[in-house]
Image (cartoon, rainbow, N blue to C red; front, side, top):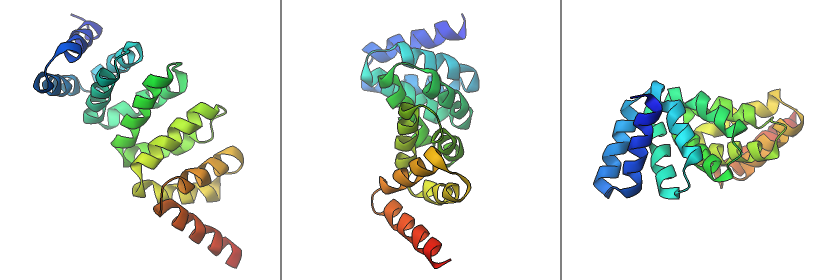
Amino acid sequence: MTMEETVAGMVAGLRKGTLDSRRAIVHQLADLGEEGVASIIEEMEREEDADVRWYLAGALVRIGEPAIEPLIEALVTSNDDEARRYMAAALGSLGEPAIRPLIDLLGSNREDVRGYAALALCRIGEPAVDPLLQSLDRTSGVQHTCAALTLWKMGELGPEALQGYFEKKEEK
C-alpha cells in the first residue's frame, strides 16, 4: 500500500469515525512522520469537510518541524483558500520554529499569502513579537509594512512593542 493510499484510508476514517476514533487516527497520521506530510497536505487540499481538515492540521502539528517547509510551500502554491486557512492554523500552532519562514512570506508578492502568514504569526503570538520587530530593522517595502501591521493585529502585545520600537527610533 502506498503512502497516499494509507493516508486516504485514514481520512475516510476521519469522515465517519467517532470522536475517540478520530483522535486515534490523528495519532496514527502523526506516526507517519515526515514521510506522510506531503500526502496529508494533499488530502487537506482535496477534502471539503472542515472538521476533517482540522484533524489533518492537527496531525501535521503533531508531526512538528518536518511539516513546516511543506506547509509553507503549500500555503504559497495552493488555490484552495479554505485549505490554506487550516495550513496557516497548523503553522501558527507549530510555534517558534515556523516564525522565520512565516516572516519571510510577509514579503511575498501575493497579498493572500502575506495575509495567511500574518494570521499564523498572530496565532503564535508573543514568541513572534521580537522576530517581527527585528525584521523591521532589516526589511523594507511590503515586508516591512506587513511586519508592522502583523504586530498591530496581535492585540495588546504587538502594538505596545511596536510603539516602543518607533519611540526608540525617534530618540536616535
